[in-house]
Length: 250
Image 1 (cartoon, rainbow, N blue to C red):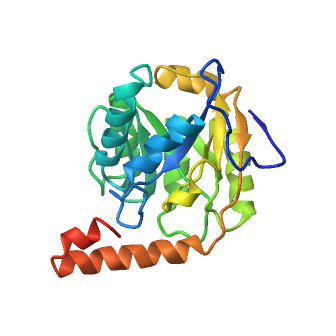
Image 2: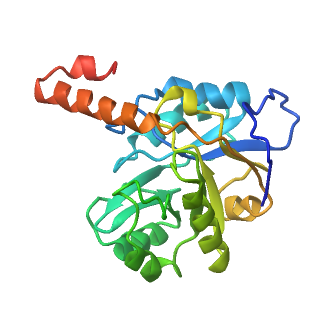
């Protein structure tokens, strides 16, 4: 995997003859309680910029199912990637190419085993981000590392660059593929951080092509975390007061 020292603002291509696509391997939609990215924006990122999103909402596959149903209406060759960022008892793990949703609250090891049983890919997101309580516990990471497919080496929402460097070093030490994700919760975060790689048909293809991918990385202003917390508070308030219609437009 190579990287560009100057981040690309956009993967500017609508050339259908171009072999490569962009893949942002960590995106949230409005199905996550702290995100306001609509399916329209994610579909448009693909149709306009050829940047595909691995949609992994918190503890639900509904966002990924909605996005990929819509993308495949016009591009049936795009694989259907059902994915979820799962809150395990010891921190978050992403499952991609799932056949069904995995419940939160299980031990990390059991969660990874359930992902593998579905023929899916497991990704450990932001493993060394000290800012987030949702990052996986080190003891649990050591327990599952032999069964995990990918370590997220580039997370645009990591506040400290050291968190990404540590994840990259850890992944390489354990001979794991590294993923690249914006961790987008807001629309402007799309199409800024992704890996450029050859098109793929399924999990094995993705792992093979990821090895030769080119990283496009642009760190996001840490202020986005404050915005996400505000979004979550507003959504929770809406739910408590029964204003579901308002929540849908937050």
